[in-house]
Length: 110
Image 1 (cartoon, rainbow, N blue to C red):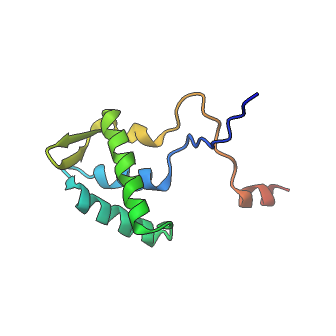
Image 2 (cartoon, rainbow, N blue to C red; image 1 turned 30 degrees about the vertical axis):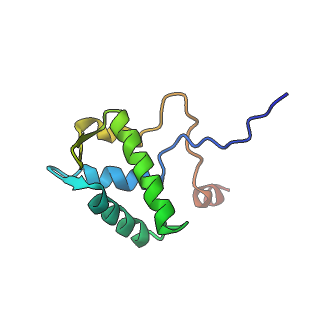
């Protein structure tokens, strides 16, 4: 009997959140290098840019291409622009488990 040992995260992660935030600006259009610089700076400000810059660049590119394939970001040449459906990227898919309650809220409820 085989077990699936891979962890599947269904909720949007910090990289996706920052990509959506950058691409959601009205009329904003970025080349990947510019977009990554914005995302990397915001992640560093949140103290969430771990794992090295090159690994983060690969993850950001993969997530951006996922948004393009889902029709939430439009790629024209080398420029990326967020579409109106981009806001749906931050909502968990149907059937996904609800996010766990914050530990601080659980501690104060006792």
